[in-house]
Image (cartoon, rainbow, N blue to C red; front, side, top):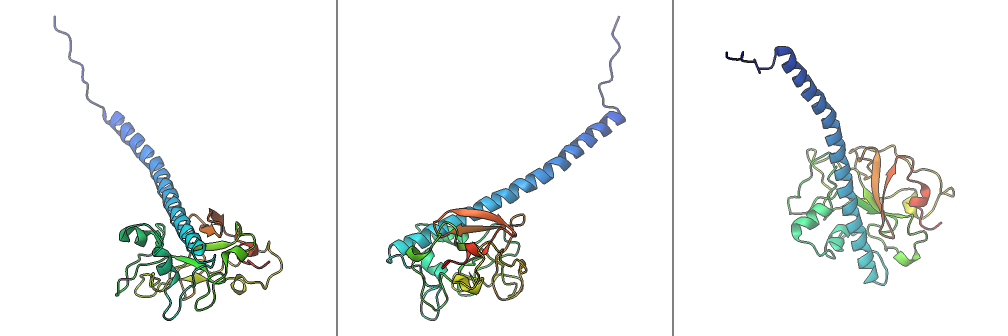
Length: 234
């Protein structure tokens, strides 16, 4: 006597349950993946800043501890100077100066300049002025050397900040003094890619990545960047 053949096909209800479970798992996975990608971009950004910091310190070590000038006129810009100290191929040198989390696209200028989304401390490395001796910087582990910067939205939305015209940030009188309370937070009013002046950009989940004068990197939330991080003569 033959046994009855069992129907192994899914019922409509079972199929809908499976589809619902798959959809639920996918919905849970997407935010986790997005979060992981953002963390990876922030990590890559901090790696870039670490290399920029190392390059600046290496330059200073070979020049009686004087930091490079920000550049003006016939003198090379800071990004050009630091790129020349890096033992990297041309493609890698370009990527070091661009934050992976930058929202606006960047492009090389018409003369082949490399785009830049980071800025140096304008008090330590003034444009057209005398750069500061790194050995004279008090609290080197607290003073920001370079950081994520806002991108100028000009040039049809493409960043015009390039290795030949890199941004520098000047905060609280250029960092040379002017405030007595080192615990006062600096202004975060300009945290968007607008205007002509570069300001710190909190593009990593509300945090700004920075490299200090001693070469270590940090990720600081709004309100955590204080006068003590920019005022290097107090």
